[in-house]
Image 1 (spheres, rainbow, N blue to C red):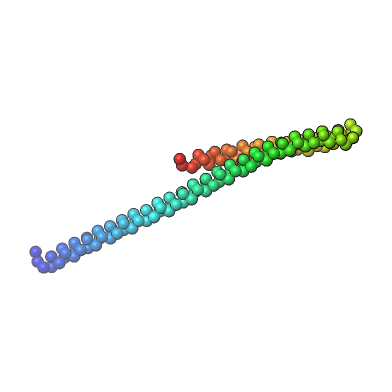
Image 2 (image 1 turned 180 degrees about the vertical axis):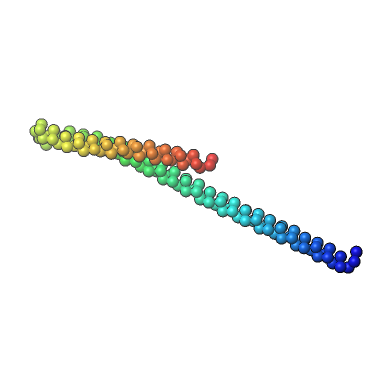
Length: 139
């Protein structure tokens, strides 16, 4: 082999080696980008799961608060009814006046009961939401 062939062969090998190095560097860079994307996705998923837990806890808190409000409202309505009965004894109202006051309070209590019925629907929706969010969380 003459000197020119040796130099040419060496140059070809050097170019091939540089090409291999370039391919390896690009492969490493691609792998690094892939790992960075996986880490970013993991952080996003952790944030989403934390938010789901927070929303589920908030929905459950709202449901419990709504339920407590309904129960308190029902207790207040019973208490008002009892107070009216007791007040009638001491007020000396005529039967007609007692009936007017009773009708007024009864109308109000019926409106209150209608609100409580809607509140039950709110309770159901919040319970369903809390359950669905709980199913999305891992474990």
